[in-house]
Image (cartoon, rainbow, N blue to C red):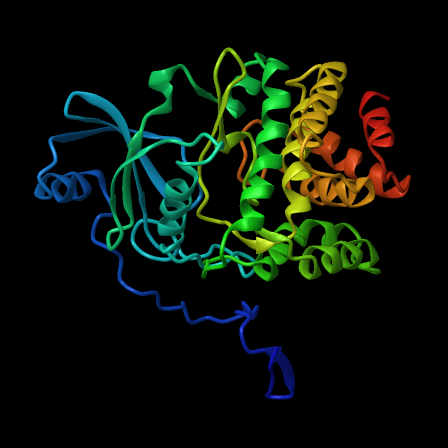
Length: 355
């Protein structure tokens, strides 16, 4: 990997580095698609010859707007993405937030199409407009599916989904190891910066806890991986069948992050009071056993990645349900105790959760 010296700083030529500085000049961003509201988006879709009517805005991710809609008398969802930094979304709101280009939308569509012929269940794409970063796809709710995060917050989590999620995450690893590499918007360097920030802040005078995780996260590239496999991006039905959504943030990196990333949220929701802790432990083991049908687990790395994600989400960043001081302190205390007690195996993790 070629290195370039510039202004006495070394940086790698194929890595985008987000500079952090205090600047009174607001950054300039490129123009949006012009489809940054429901009216303009519907007019565009009708101009493509579609008999479609957009409805309510659904809860979506950070970078996209998702609308419920009716296409030819069938209920669907319409997902549209702008750059984070144009009319639809405010520019990055702090020096540690990244500008995200709307091309991640087309990465999502690409992966959904690739997965459509696999054992991984995802919504079917009905129409995709690449230049306008807009996709029309099946509404999974019509088939009895509901977002796992909503189910958990309502107190209705069923253990039936645990094994299936573990199995499918394992199968997703296999899929990613065979996938030919292509360009993505995000990468492992930007991801460790974003997800490791709170871990760094927790130990400002040493950084030892962060640096050992960073080394693993950056240097172990096992294939294509999905860093956003959390309950906001997983649909579940009453039988425990699952559907995965939202692959725009995927990249090539350490696949060992995917399982602890998901299970960190089970821990978080348990600490926040939405899950009985004994039930959460059963769910964790069932999910782990499902994953182990196709993948090995390195428990020390599993625990390090899990605690990093708990730090990352402890104050409710980009997830619902962690709002009160008591909830936040419970999550933060758990993460700090995992590090303090040097918990590096599954039994230690679950014992701490139920203690």
